[in-house]
Amino acid sequence: MKTHRKKKSIHVISLGCSKNLVDSEHLMAQLEANDFEVFHDSAASPSGTVVINTCGFIHDAKQESINVILEQIKAKEEGRIDQVFVMGCLSQRYIRQLKTEMPELDGIVGVNSLAEVVQMVGGNYRKDLTGERLITTPSHYAYMKLSEGCDRKCSFCAIPLIRGGHVSRPREEIIAEARMLVEKGVREVMLIAQDLTYYGMDLYQKQSLAVLLEELASIRGLEWIRLHYAYPASFPVDLPAVIRDHENICKYLDIPFQHINNTVLQRMRRGINSRQTHALIDRLRSEIPGLTLRTTLMVGHPGEDGKAFNELKEFISSVRFDRLGVFQYSEEEGTWSARQYRDTVPQKSKKERMDVLMELQEGISLENNRKRVGGSYKTLIDRKEGEYYIGRTESDSPEVDNEVIIKAGQTLKTGEFYTIKIHEANAFDLFGTVAEGE
Image 1 (spheres, one colour):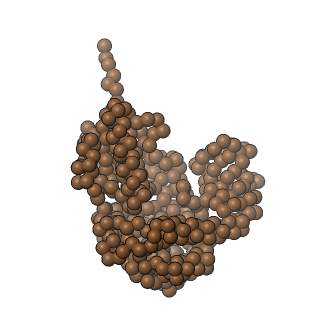
Image 2: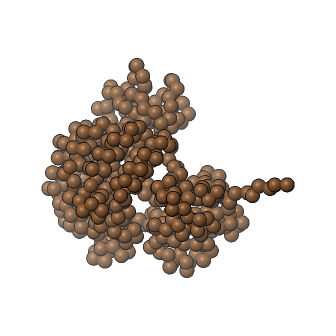
Image 3: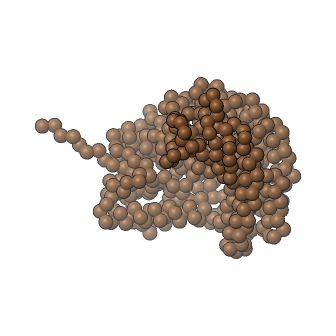
């Protein structure tokens, strides 16, 4: 009598940023090709083997990773799972400490170690699957990584210490992956990297993001291409025109300016000053009509006194960013800031400054959204929740930006585009109905 061997169960827990998520998706494709039963961040209790892809960027992210590791070690000790493996940024930075303090772990590797992870869990790494991914996002959108590492020298950032210098992926490899994603039903790709605007400097000896975008924009079925993490210093002069001239490249840029005070910018080693920052924003808004500009700012970096913080508030009030996130400075060992400056801003002050900026931005966002009432916008439907469909406009990226809430008066398809007329707005959501004629 023929018996069927039960598949080995592997649960992949992905922590941190979208770049980590892409790594996890590539890992999962390899595991599935080895005939394992693969789960990602499953709501069900993990069983069998657990692989944790950790984050080590800032203190809170590191603490979350440690907590998850400890939870899975406890599950192993209680017999609920068999093995725990750790990979990613936290283990890249602290591999010796983890081996010493958590001997219960069955294996520890850092970043860019996909083959090692596959082999550790009992599989065979397949080079022929390079580029293959098991998509964990809704099937109509996906993140796509253009490069690894970073050559910038930002004083507060540990990424170059963790992931090394900038390494671009070849254009043909990226294009092939994009075509594969579209064949799987993806309608929108979010281009991600530690620094998008540096793309191609190592391979082609010049900034090549605009050239890559021209090729991506020609892929039939790819309806939205979105750019995340564009560095402000040495911004490519040819990029705005490409964004402007292609209908399927979202008029959306995510540029982390971090600060506006010259002293703080210099201490951050950002390579750009206040005047240049304002000039870049003016140029982008002039050359890309209808641009949605997202930024990230940091409060509490050493050197940020009351005057510098007031300048940052004025920056937000005058520029009126469409989307904005705020982080508190976290001293990261090994970085320039940690070596050169004392972390003199109290944690309470950092939190208060962050709250002030977010409250200021909430008012700006409300005013901007109210201006959209009465307008109609192309909207991508992400999901249905109860009696409502949830979608996004060209101005919004998943999970971090605004959403469009649509009463389920008629059947809409997830992953499809509809024209939605906006009837109401609050600070972070738009409310509408399907426009007549749809």
